[in-house]
Length: 105
Image 1 (cartoon, rainbow, N blue to C red):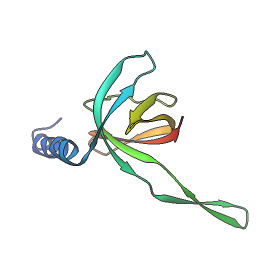
Image 2: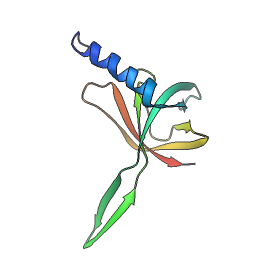
Image 3: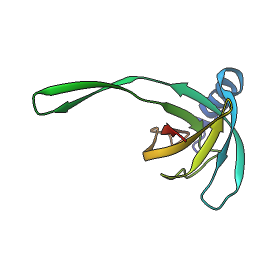
């Protein structure tokens, strides 16, 4: 992390601590990590031929410092609900935040 990125990283951590929801991320090896999640539920438009479908999604941001390498199939628990990571997690440009898509388990 570059010198100019450190203040931004501190701001992100503070944002997650104040606006995020505490939860637990369970890695494939069974280790559990306490972290904060920011939930997003945007609609996604998918096209199948001439048909367009609007589907609800469940996406969550989490700090890369807590979960450095999330993988499809791993699970997390948030507000009493267990979720499974589906699809490829996406990192932001600075590699500070992961966005994961979750499916209820």
